Length: 157
Image 1 (cartoon, rainbow, N blue to C red):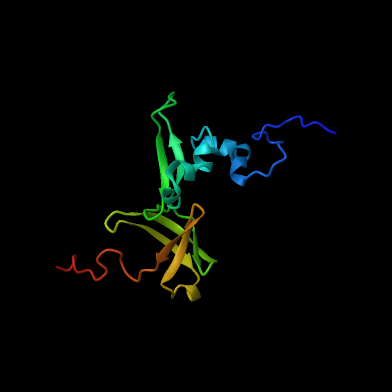
Image 2 (cartoon, helix red, strand yellow):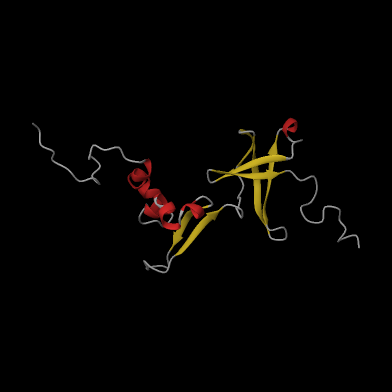
């Protein structure tokens, strides 16, 4: 009868099935460090840290620490609802990629992200689209006019 040499559950060779999230640190360690995450656990265990309710609408993006410090850092989160687009995100409709955003900014006056992009003429007549940013899809709608004062009532007074 063979003897088990390693009964440690946390060993990579424990012989048990492991969730993909447990392997994140092994696979993406260097990428995580580039965004300030010394340990991958804040990303892989986000649901346990903030709870299921907040994990559904947020995820950590980066941590920045003051030069030479290991404490007092600023955690940047991506949060649904007030998403920021940068340009280069896929424009989708019914699951199909139709185009790409060319530029985007936060619309302070309207309190929403504003993105400009290109889709083929035959797809441009729809009002409902999705913009995919950071692996999440966000509802978007095409505007025929300006987002603020589309009838120009404020400037024609």
